[in-house]
Image (cartoon, rainbow, N blue to C red):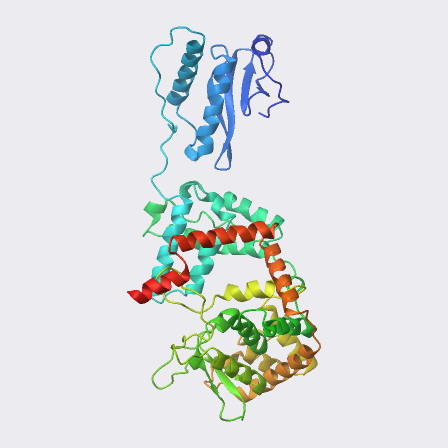
Length: 527
């Protein structure tokens, strides 16, 4: 029954309410203690505490209002709410009585009366024992470990492991970490999805529904159902939100916007590797992961055309098989590089190759190992996202470049849809109004169709070079300051001076503890 407007109780108000109680049972809230209510009827009066636990409203009985004093009710009510807020659930009846006895003893002691021996009350005494199964946080960790083992066995891709782990471990889902899986139901996840939709994060909400269903299916399998406590089919009723107009939400950048990105990448204000990686992404319209995973041995001259190069792209979204001894390029997605682009790649290789030390196999190696003592892998694809996002006045993301390539190729240069699809290496064109009709060709031929891809990349490269000349950028210091300011803004840093001091202190601490990348490199070399 809904509580009426709260009033602050005192002893006389409590006595009056009990004495004058008539009609059907009703609840009266105490404005002096959150959650404390007194249920009144002509024949009874009892103290209760209202609290929310695991998404449900609980009403915990304290005791008879005729025998419990108001101070006792308020003191125990606070403790009951603390018990529930700590995630221990509704306390046992014995615990409530012990708390009341301890409060009564303390009141006697303060009045100078004989209080008797001290009463020991355990911190927590749940009404029902908690499940001996996984919490959501433990379940997330177990699923991630299982997926990593499957990835090592070749059954899952590393990108899939990262994606699934990120979705079930997102900020909104981590609110469930302390709850037991057996007590989580579809409405609990639906409430999270609703919040994401209200924040205009429909795509994230859809990912949550998609991945959570698979997560629960795995937990309900015989191999781990006894440990997880998951109920089979618990998430079957969970529905993903509609994305609405996908075309309206996607950004189709114009050529000048992409040319501006290219100009910043070539300006020199970014690091050489980051700038060249963005260049390669723009000139080839390939995915971030394909660019950062490019290997030096994937690039070679194209004998059929003087001045051209080839990129035998090893990482692909649509698998064609693995390399063999007879065909070391099997499964690759080959791209012809026009002379201007091929010259840029060769110049970068000359700049980053030294006779003093062997060059990394990666075209764009990372700055440091992921973990202390580890090897340096390729650059993270997120590095490109952050670098592009910091470019002032730019709305386009790295993936939007693919839409710009498709738009310019088809609208401005009349490149056939099939040839655009060959370059993008996509099941469908990134233009929503165009259906890529070369699926049969892609699946039933081993030829890379380089002569068909070359015109599209040549036209795109020429258009970028022309548009790049029209871009005017500020001087290096100003541009660098703009990039730093935009980066700080996106990170939510409001005081750059304080942020600089914080980073300097963190660097000094890392140096004092021997945790910097340079110190770790020396230790590794010494061993």
